[in-house]
Length: 374
Image: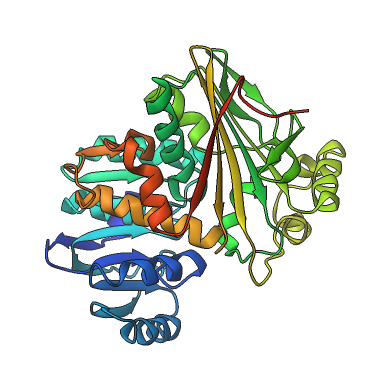
């Protein structure tokens, strides 16, 4: 059965209409809405109209706020959805590419920040087959594409990016939506990376090492993230590696111990989902998002520590907001046509200033070699 027949949604492009945030009142969606409401009218959708109405009421009171409306659109419900919109941002998992298909068919600029690698690869294929006339920005690199943007900024300074190493410090005290850890639920599946110009399959949580991220020495290990797929294609990177660790040494040790016990392989499926989520998903009231990016080219290296004291939901929303500006050509450069990734920004020299203006600090330092591993 054709999915486009099952989900007979109808979007149309209105350059003066609202920006549609699908999942617009979830943890990340609400952060994005608060950041975007002064620039564009918004249409928020999700499964609960009550939650949407409450956020719309909050946004109406913000200084300089544009009109905000809320409607129900449950992506698991076959009931069709229709709207005339300026652009669409996907801030919730879209497992059947339902939102992407509707936007691409209608020629509506589209940004997505929710896909793990395999789903991003499929989305790029779906979009290519639909031949969209409008931008399709697949910005699911870590934290809404922030890793790709900062990598592009460092690569411009160095003249390229042969080797990229990313180390993420996940603050266990931070807020997080359930969707934000779904990719971590795939820790039992091998994934492909490019290492020294060759593609190879690796196991999740391999290659553990200790990296200094700001003032914090953090034990990190390999994780499947989309930038490891896109950076070799877009920047010609010959080695791209992303690793993750928790702010708690005990939490990281437990994660690695579960991996060594084979839990993520034999503990797959619905039966073990509560146990996996108990280990990986324990959101708090707020924390600090930190990550480190090391880029090497032609024997020269730069290291950047990215920090958002408002937390990972805010940092992801910042990435989504910059992606929205890119898709609308509101960043001072012409909007792209068709599929693009965040690191393909035509303004890499402005990335760090753009992040700073949105409350994200990036400390860049020269290094003799990439990484600070021990």
